[in-house]
Image (cartoon, rainbow, N blue to C red; front, side, top):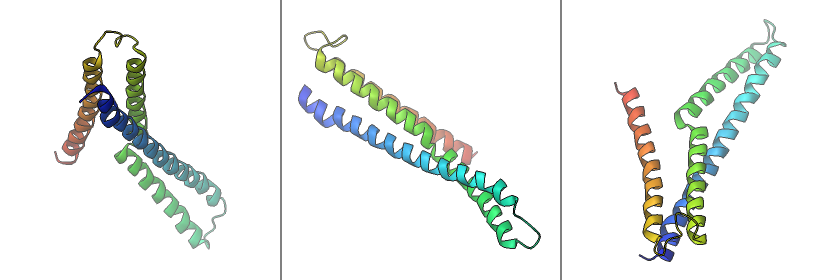
Length: 145
């Protein structure tokens, strides 16, 4: 595989994958957090209108509290904010390596620096995969002591 093929088939593919996953995680995190904030703000507002006769309002307030708890749990389990940041960081570091290589900037200013690019890129991807694998193992161990 030559440098052009590697950059197109591996490096660009990984940059795009991490960028898409970062955007998706960011959207999920922001949507769920906004919903959580909205319902958290509604509870004290609605509570001001409660009387012994407003059973529907009491149910609605209880349901809002339930939704807040569920959303907090989902955010905790899926770690959208952490993934958003980790994926964005990995995407940007891969872009940085790509640009350094394309411009022949150190450490890619040697005559045959393609193997160094491959080594550094694969190391970054491997590190991300190792981090993900460790996260999954930790989660499984917590759930199955």
